[in-house]
Length: 158
Image (cartoon, rainbow, N blue to C red):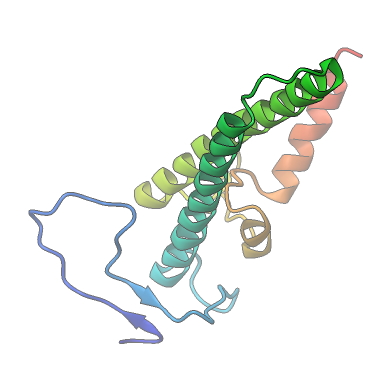
């Protein structure tokens, strides 16, 4: 173990599995501006953060699916049926948003693998650790995101 990081050698014949890592980080580890940006520890920290987030979403999605199946009963009262349909529509919209979020998480995991994670897609500059901590799927720095949002407002049809 070196600086809170344990490493093991992996065979070159193994296929890559993003859920398995040879790097072990201490549970109390927090990325710091005082260490090299996107070093192995930081990459592993964000990889675990993204995978845990994805697992939570998938678990919640499975639970919702079970609830929707259980609630798929015939309601004799029209008000109950309407309420149930409204609840179902809201849940389905939430699931669609979560499906899109999972795609963004997967894209972030891909960026971790190719080395582009944590760098602004627009400027190539590092995205602040504070921003990545708050929004680990961020692809733009705060400044680039603000410019993007300003341009969106200018060209938006109201």
